[in-house]
Length: 433
Image (cartoon, rainbow, N blue to C red; front, side, top):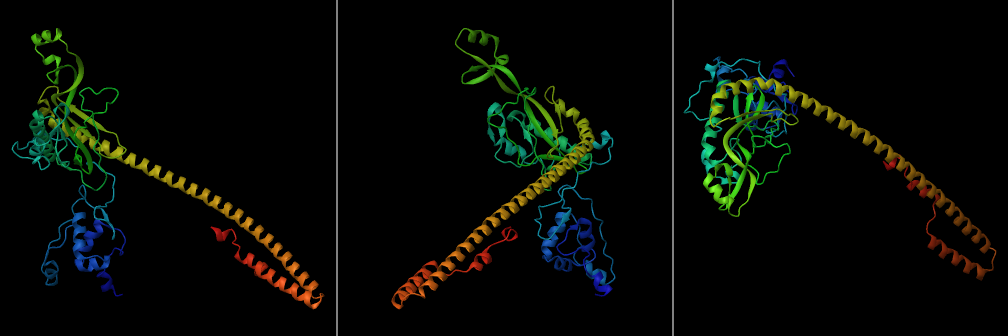
């Protein structure tokens, strides 16, 4: 192949892994059809790969311009964003991506003027959520349970729906103004929504809640650099003494004193129940497996969190390096556990192999002894027939004929006797593995 022909070939090997950088270099060096043929895929599929990798492709007419000496600008490769495919290999599903360790940006102090936002603007994650939540079922303590799972992670009662969505919208816009991206968790790796206890003062022993509060199919996350931080906004509950009146529980603190006096003289009973407080809590958490980080900001009174959003944005920014280190440590521990498991499986396989070898050796020995015994039996039978034939030859004609006929019947009954056949059919220890 000539040097010119070599230059017209993609640098990556067919079927091998192709990084974002390699794909970017190839699509701007050669037409898509050549690259697609090299990787044995269609050009339309390769275009989808480029989209998943966030690799810009040459526009229509790019190669014609170059042939005619007309410049066609080449945009730089953008930094990989959350959910972007890092490495592609032919045969991989486009949802399958590499899992680089998340990295936080260099810590920085966010200036208040950076966080000025338009109060009329709606963040895409919040758009349309109000109508879906409002149409949802009302469950225990008045919490809403919408019919859709792909929604912003807000868990509140109906009276607090609008304030909660407004608070979430303001927080998301401020995070984006600070340079962080808020979105539903992408599919580049496993992001888990952490469970939480809605109690303002969670009990020491967790209580199983029935019915369960609503939870989204994908957590709402903010990316600080490439570090994902989960965000949940929920309404807190508190445990209060309550009276059962007219088919429902009412906190005794909300029953007028006159009515309480009347109730005291009649048959009634009280208990302790959980009630929604009307106060919100913003909870941030690590959505990565095997990492345990969370931080909460609670309203002391309704609406008090609105004045803390700038501080929350800064604290989330500062938390990213901590989470990144936790993920790195967790994945290193997972790698060690995986390696230990592999070594354990190898040792187990070795023990099983030794066991199989011993069993094969013992079975081969038993079968060989059986073949030797069979050989001994054959030799005795053959000696019997030989002696009988020798003795029959000395008998008178009539008796000899009778004897030889008997011997023929006996030989037919016993069958073919070959002392070597048993050895040929015998399998040695290695043949049994």
